[in-house]
Image (cartoon, rainbow, N blue to C red; front, side, top):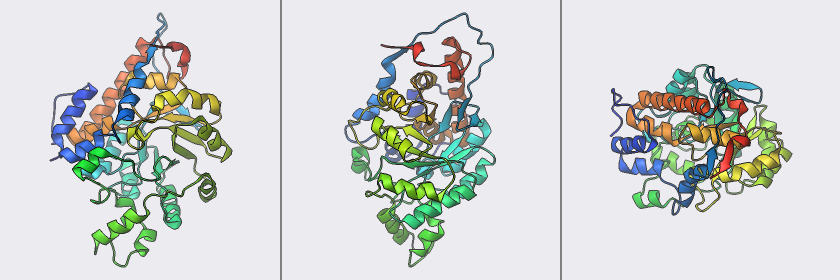
Length: 373
């Protein structure tokens, strides 16, 4: 069962959006999106961390014209958020990433494509048109395949590479284990692999001839437990695109990213989906900002649900944020239209939140507008 792509009553509150998405898709698919790893402490802490900070507005400032734009490595973006890379979206809606890409184009929101998408990165790029796009890389055990994915992303117009570093192996996701739902095994994350010439030459039969054998090969090589800092030299030499490390939680890793020539980092605990009991992303942010000292942009991921979350993350030093689960719920609820609705409401929420905090520009935000609650 999927969203019906018909006119539906607008939904603004995250919990209502979540409930509606739950009613629109298979239970095991909803659980995959909604759940975290282990006892889901980190999943809850990511949201709870925002409540520790309270905004102290200052009024009688002209907020008649608002500027939500941010700049990342010299590129200006109209909104302070990008669409986080989320895999396996074909399980959520038949049009999966293509519907999300069309919504990103419609709303002028930058899109970050996952490695484990149902559709190929080239198909997604065509749907995006001129919309800014980045590519998130799961570094495969197969180095030649990793190189092929990066080169394909370059050719398809992706303008940055996000290397996910917090997934040497898949986290202990008890909800998915209980449901025995593994979307990669079901083929929902195979689009980039099945279309890749390097991956295809590893197979005795094509994915079209023997999809089960192709999936088994994919499962053998998708993650790279032996990946280390020294491997970053390979990708640094491979591409001239900016490289971000996604999954940074320790200040020392922020410093090492600089030492290894990375262009940016994403402070993230994978939305609470990898190691349970780790620090909330927002709690990790200030110390990483202090360590990096503005030398490279710091994006923020995990726990963003509403406009005030964006303000708080940026006030604590993030350059911009990544939005994940909310837009996926919109996709589940109503396909392309559902994603557009979520993005429009989210953008309006940021707009109103900024004005009612007494600021006209996102760039004016800093820690002086916050106190610990």
